[in-house]
Image (tube, rainbow, N blue to C red; front, side, top):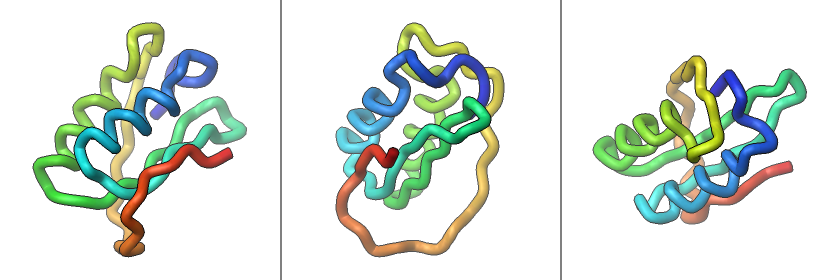
Length: 82
C-alpha cells in the first residue's frame, strides 16, 4: 500500500482485520514509506482484506494497492513484522 500508511496504526488494524477473517500471513512497513501485506486463506476472505487495505484505518490515506500472487506457506497465524 502506498500513501499515508505509516504512523497511522495501519499495521495493527490490518493485523486485527486479517485475524477476524481467519487469514494467515504478515504485515510490515517498508523503508520507502509503504506497507507490505502477505496473506493466505480463502478467496472471499482475501478479497475482503484487499477491500479493507484499499481504505485502511481512519487516519490512513491509501493512494494505491498492488497485488501479486505468492506461494502458500501453510502458516496458521497473522503477525506484524518489523
